[in-house]
Image 1 (cartoon, one colour):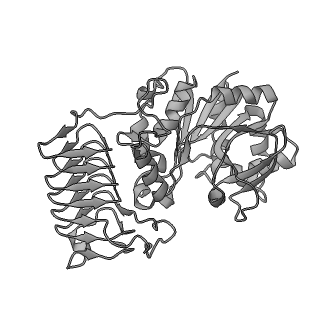
Image 2 (cartoon, helix red, strand yellow):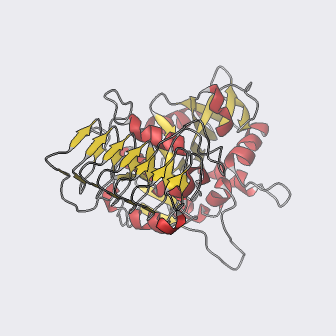
Image 3 (tube, one colour):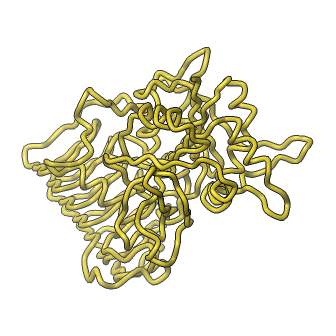
Length: 418
């Protein structure tokens, strides 16, 4: 059986606010030196799948540059390998991907060119380690037209996922896409699908102008169940997180710092590969201190770092304190500055004595109360926080802001946006 993997990596990731403003969500840095998509790509090659299509659309430049020809993942191959698949215009009027299913349908030529009879469809924005071979073997053994990777989620989060009900044989009998009601159960789709290639093309081609097959969760899966196709569930019991919100992104990063973290990055058994920059080892000054933290290559720490994740090239000045925060590449933190429960994008400058993350966590962001309400302050790429500024909780500072965007007294209230 020949399997091709198709990674959906074109989403905007709007719930991540400014972190995905200039890049696709799968390209957002994670766990210091990695990008989110590294986990899915590594799962493929570790599972022995070396023909991979990456479907990009929204702000693809950072993602394209990161993946390149796929060398870090051993995907720079003359046969198979990785292919970046972007929407393009042709005489028949091909256009932007309208949804997950439409994106796959527009790239069926790549699947047939790969001579694949099985298609593994994956999301590029989840954090997990998974061997896909047992799921593929389960799919083949059950004679399914479609197998969906599933796992239980907290009942209060079911409105974020496709929720399904199964019979005693694990055949899916009902599927609800992001139900508002909480009485449908909590068995959630992981966004991992195994299709027979012929069944996939046939079901996608059945759409019409009146009932287009745009999205797997909304259109394709319910239609297949209604038509009597054999749609099976495959239960996954490992670590899996959708880091689609600022809260889950921050929490998942910091979970890695726990001694009993469910996601082990320090093992040779299932390595996570990435495109790594050539930088010197991290350096710590005579008055520095790092506690329960992840400090990447190229960092210089002369202050204190507590329960935080620093990406490559971060500079922490003497007297500065970074606590419960995620700080991305090449950020400069000035003398005596304090970061407390902050997510900082790349190339940010934190001025001398600035305090970021102080105040009342209960005050949500005024413009985005549904996205920033857990006390986390977010700073966009290339922003400059003035010397002595005091920035509250649940604050959003957009990319490229400088001292002229701040109040004259430097005080940014809880829940404000700059």
